[in-house]
Image (spheres, rainbow, N blue to C red):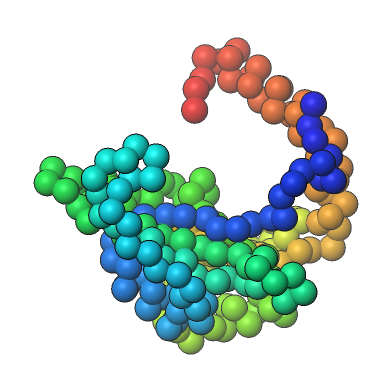
Length: 187
């Protein structure tokens, strides 16, 4: 059974992490071109779960603080891990077909979305949109590593739509899985 929102001890996004080709290139994009401050850079000399000897840089950008809740910032983070002999950079950085590997950031309203369109254009960053999805409108862009990002603004009724779909989410997922089994499909 799904937990209600009140039962979940989570406050929303903390960070979403990706691998980058170069920490400085990534910093210049996020901080200099988009204006999100670099707030942490850690050199680490071991894989955090396996203990494998590997050195890397872990960087964090503040993509939106909650002024009324100190310490509740939202971050996008990257790992700059140097290539090893035999690594195929094209394979490591290949983006999939675009909708499954992305990160969405909420903006206040459609005016804010328009300002982001203007800012991206002024910074020379190609973007797509705005695209109306029915419950929100979005613009999409890529960072220097090929990762896809999104700014999204709520359309009228988004909260209602999520509530209504939440009631049938598990049922819809079960139906989707049964449909795949019937057709012997896998993901």
